Length: 281
Length: 245
Image (spheres, rainbow over the protein chains, first blue to last red):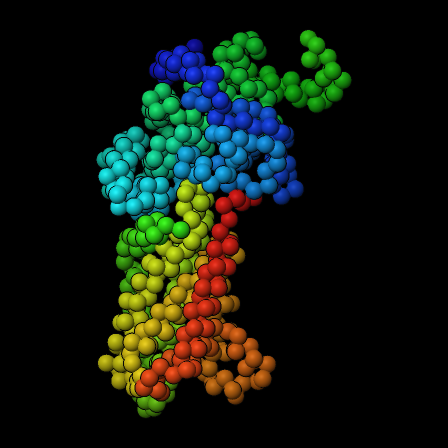
């Protein structure tokens, strides 16, 4: 019923990715726990994110998606358990040039033009006079990637919300990172732009071999991912492909599957005895 | 630390300012206007203008740079660009040095205008070299940048950041010897003024005003102001955290 143009690209990427599926996961978490203030935001998570694929991180607002992403990027304090990213512990200085990170609120300088913003971040990633040509190429490509060529010389502060978040995304695409961590990149965008961005994500994963971890609270975006992590209240409810999730829960959409999983979790919490029977069935 | 990243940061900060010509105009013209006013307020007693004018040449860059830096770094913190930069291969020292360089440059322009106006047009009687006045003004600007950077870590909003100005700057202004010589204050206040950096900034200016050459006291003043600036810049760097709660 959900026939996205991206599906074909997704399938293609799935096929090419199966050959490299044996490769080490891009992210491996074990007993990942994070406390913010007096609240435990992540509760002993175990999961992996396969390399070269798009993994969707879905769940309601406040379930811990952003905290998990900040832990992966290495900006979250008080992270317990083990978290390996691209073969190194999360937050390792060597990872800083290998990960592109887009925060939920666009983090760009409003008083600089789109190109000036990208020029500066490119100079941080690829410093020095010798790399001037590389920087120019990277900036031009990033602007074209997010389709902002016609606004390259506009001040970021004068752009619409959706355009500013695309500038923020363009910054993350500079320097061809191996892992892209995108926190709600499509919030507030119109359907056409959302489709274009998802096509871009698939193109980046397929052509550049980049691993993408994309969060969203819009369930229909789940169908566009290769793999899903469904989160609720700091726990992971499911870690599977969209297809398998639908099949296993006998539902037509991932959204229904998610609701079914949430209801089951709530029922288990209300009647703890049934939890003993669950694994046997 | 990488000089290319430091220079790129300084260029970026200046580029941001260039999109805000009103702020530049205010930064450069307000000190000149104040000196002009002061000159004619003390029209009948040129000696007073010499004293206060020279002190103010040291105080203006400190206050301006304090305000500009505390707001600019606060914006960097709240807009998420600081988090983004610290998740990138940028050293904290690169960021701080970039800010200090950009605002230092601005302070040179501001101090040159103010000093030139005071010495050549308003008849400020300086016995020492105007270059030494400029040197102290520059060190003061650096101190202002350092204090602003440090204080911005404790402000959650621009509203709070502005309130830090009276809290951090006014006590120093009262105790620095501008209104009354420091040795005539209550002993406790004199002791307090001995440990506040602005006292040395003002004393340095007065040394240049009264002596033809750089005196021992002048060198002590310059070293104390520069040392304080570096110390506070270091403290400011410690407030930049790659991992936050």
